[in-house]
Length: 151
Image (cartoon, rainbow, N blue to C red; front, side, top):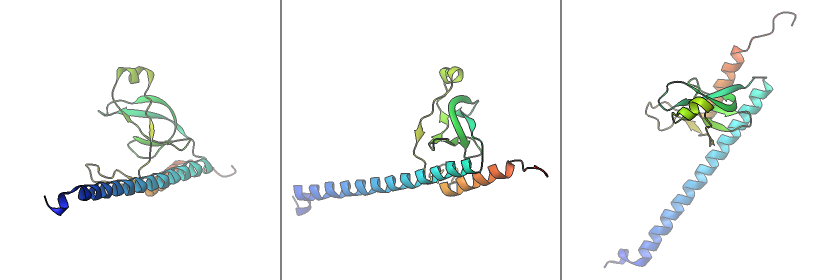
């Protein structure tokens, strides 16, 4: 049995693995906190600009049809699968297909917003959350009817 095979080596390995896991958890928590700040900024800015929230719908994983939800907020992507509600919570609006959801509506849970939307996806397209939200605000503002003369 070599010097590297003993209990001391195994304990060092356990500590190293634990330290890596804790560092990863701290990094994820910092990313979630930053993403939550960006989402809160988006809600405040949408409200300030007078952008009206809409009733949100969810799409089944298969992509056919849409299900009602009880959520009100703003879609933040063109596919209408990601949204922010008026309370500043992030939603991925894809849900399992079900007869119950078809009849009674879907209830997607909020989740942590990613700092990079689409990262790790198959299509290779990803976008920083800050950029996605800023683009969406600009698109909403560009579509708003401008007051006419004398208004």
